[in-house]
Image (cartoon, rainbow, N blue to C red):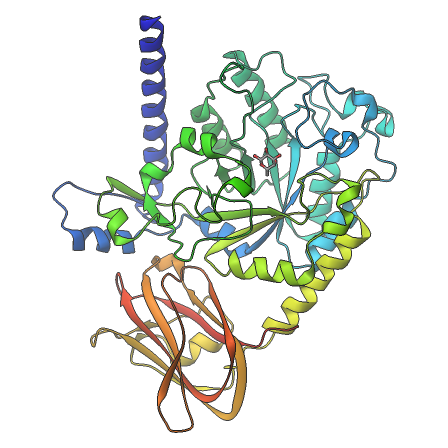
Length: 515
Ligand code: FUL
């Protein structure tokens, strides 16, 4: 017994070390250009650690992923027909039979709502494959749909190409149908399925590995060969980010649509712990305080002071438009409203994350009317709020080291400024001809130069010429949105008063939230 435990421990230590070696190599291979990984030496002073953190930047694929802001999940499969959320892998493929599957509609609506990528549940925990995999009988091939000649993965990836959307795959590691699950051969099976998905459907931009496993203490125990999976993805789809149980994108820690008040993308490597992620994954959100599942503070000075190394590991915020991940007719009245979706936009994208919003097609194989209506409503609110930066005609001034002050209001993320912070702070002063009313502040750092801002605030000049504080925040990162009671002013200033190093500011905007 003891020796078995030791052996297991030895095996898991070796596996973990190999995994870290892989990650280290994959990070250091981009290090020369991108530096999305840095080692902290035991002799590094606290200020040296802060300097190092400020210079960790996203890899090319992580940057492209972050710029999308809005990505979508499509949960569709056997559960759509059984009404379950987690199938056991024993339901007959005979029940998979969408009457009028319309992937074109899914992608068209998502595109119109502003989404840039769609991730399909090619295989959920029940093991049922939405493509005719050559390696299992548990797939669309053995369903009555299109007489077994259908391929949902093909239809979705084709529609994505047609509408210029990125395509992503969700392949559940936990598989309740495969007889191989729990054995080393399962990893080979998984590799073959990954290969099918990564070679037969064009470009894949995200691979999503779920951490969930409901086997329990007496269930099957599968040791996943992450190292092989990751290498295969890097080889076959080098631009794809690997999310959740992967090295590129971090699960934010809840399914509520909320990021953290202080959301650092540079975190100690120790946070990339697959086992801890798997263990914490998908706990019922009601039993977990919002935003608190994996700790509230992942990257402050206090946290990074103890790190052995730091990585760029940004947050993805997954949430469903409905209470469930799969379509259930009795949830038609519980679809999130346009207002609720806007709120989620603020607490996800507006908190330095990428939103992954799930919109599950129904039994017919379509988005239900109410989901379409609310997606469109969300887009209307979004456009009505964000199309025009109220500062666009302002006269901007700020002491700068690089760029023109007006670069921060030109609506172009690629033009940015580096403020002169020799006085310990950067002050962006905006003067307008006419008074404006606003209740939203948006600030963006060009994360290609790192995430550096630790504190900032917005002030307006009142009728007596006195500066009044309106709002304040800690981290910015790719995008920080703050809401506050309606303000009227002609003159305002954004002050950045705590940084890790001189930041690069891309955009600053004021908006009025549409009702
Ligand atoms: C979880 C799964 O258990 C849910 O069914 C869903 O797929 C969600 C996105 O991830 O871990």
